[in-house]
Length: 486
Image 1 (cartoon, rainbow, N blue to C red):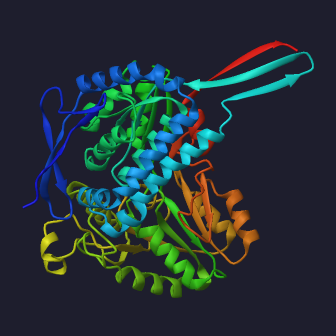
Image 2 (cartoon, helix red, strand yellow; image 1 turned 120 degrees about the vertical axis):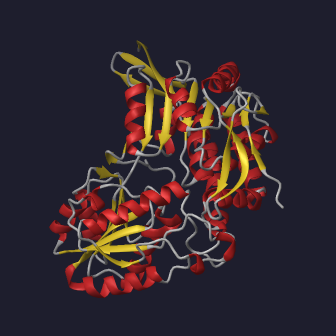
């Protein structure tokens, strides 16, 4: 029998249980089994973490950027050293295939740390401007203690996406992973000590969003909040942080279109649409959950797309051949099930999936897991709830469009504006579409291809601010303008 995991806070350079001694279960969603306990932190724990971070801040901010970068690179090396251990934790915690955690999530976490180490070495924190009678210098200095709240879908991947630029810029951090997936963030806290980070520079508090996350947002000693998660939670964070004049960066929901023109490379577009719709069981904010296909090839595309989706291998995340693991929790599966029933009530036709697998369809170890079959739905208008509200699961709608203008209209008919992907052999058309699409990220003939230097984020209700590259470093630095006669 495996030893149960004990997931504690990492505060001031060491592990702590919660101040009140409370804990929460750690559930493996693929089996439904309790595999450990985690600290259930609240305001008192956040106070301890903030105090440690504030105490560590002056010395950390004063370190040359090259020294901070070297520590981030050492931490990246430790993540790479422990890739198998971390991937096993990630898969057990989230239900995602171990192969995906091993090949994408953990390597990207290390890449985030390395990227911001290099970025801060090259970053010009001071800039001079000359006018006929004056010289001005803009000085950007670390802003203090950063509150970083990350989601459950890409746990270590997005945890490091938050903390790496904060640490690189010279801020100290109070970070909270999702209570659904606490284990790799706790492991990273311990690795930070091995990498040489001083006590108090990186603090990881575990617990529910309503208690622990809320305490971070409202803490007067944490002047900036970066959050990735649901739009409703983001709106609540703004309502609390706004009156406190806190700086906020919010990466929120999406209802992203995959737009396929008749001249597209058919096989590449099918593969791209399947990957965009169903990677990580559709639990990525960037997933293409609305597939729009030019009418002239619609029936052929729909048939091939459904065939490919139906063939996705649903199984034990630990098995090498599994392409679709479980959803993150039984509660989340309930939300997905309710969304599919609503789609049926709205007149949608389920072309494949549309249900949880029977126990007999799953390997014995995971028959108690939070599974949902990859689902494709046809016949819904763009203004229905199914096409307007984020489901965040393996559920995709498909419909036809007539021409470029119709594709743009359908794609933009959303309160969200995070990402779109366009498939066409005509690059000029792809660029015309990119110009008109109301999305912060547009891919042409690809999906999830990333250059970490470019701004990342969405329009409309998909977020506030941008992450990535210099945008992220600037978020964690306060600008000051100094001018003298010249």
